[in-house]
Length: 455
Image (cartoon, rainbow, N blue to C red; front, side, top):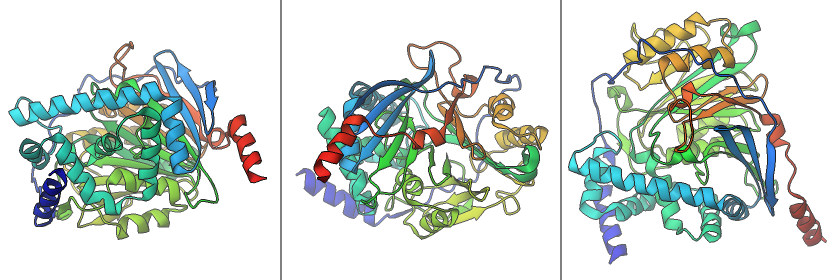
């Protein structure tokens, strides 16, 4: 019965593959005029080893309430998934349970009209008609053909380690396609930076700070087997068990940014439910792509879905473009072709930026002003102090990628049992050396097993 219902729903959706959510309106809200600089100290300490098992190591970096798990994984996709689910089983299980519970509460509120804005209206209608599990399984079914087998293998590994159904992992990972978040980004190079050297990129995630994600921050560092065509080393910056990419940095010195678009203009064209989930496409950039051109080809030739602004930075050539992204377009933009055009979104030499949404004057004006004030001296430390804190962007998770020094600066929203400011942009940032993360050696037991089985 369930399979028949799913098939009918998929056939129904196929008639409505292309979706238009054209909304000729500006975003709501604006930064507070009383926003204060972030004067908290930046935490710069070495990671501390907590434990290691076959195919995984767990470190802790940062101090007190501003500390983050760093999980290193080795092996095949299944082996990495199993090791992940084993070494942080409590955190991973806690995240899945907490976020699922939050989604259920938001679904009920959205359908009843109590709250608005978290889920897309078309998805809420589908849940009301079919139920949450079936609605998410439909999303999985219509995107499965565009999803690499390595995602399923990794999820199976986590499922076997934790006892959580594979379906539940898949359902959770499709939420990004169905929710409406506001975020910000910029890329700056050349004359915008001290000594005109390097590339600095921002990815600020403005999403729910009370949905459970904030309790399980994690940097997951993948070291795939080099002879299995599973890509190169890369780091996901997110939460325990979240294997799609919303922030990340690769050993090929590529990094990603993303903004959900709730206020597009007609240039976006159509959206679609049939395609590669964007968090999977972004992970593929980190895991497989070696150059900016590789990422360009992936996004322009791939099967795209919803309205977004993506960002791709390449520290090897100090290049950053944002991407107007939908089922209809993949428009790469530099500092001279930046859109949307308007007095509230002025072009700045050697800078590409977007604040909170596509049509969002209030946040873009403040972001442009803060970047301009620091122009020529735009460093991670200065931007943390005077850009994201004043624009008030990056409530849940925020990362600056400093390509010139191969380091990142990241902060997470306050956890339920933590103290200090609630939003990530107001908290202490943790500095992480990416060269050292990618150079991490496998656990001793893993090396012994490899030597035994290679004989």
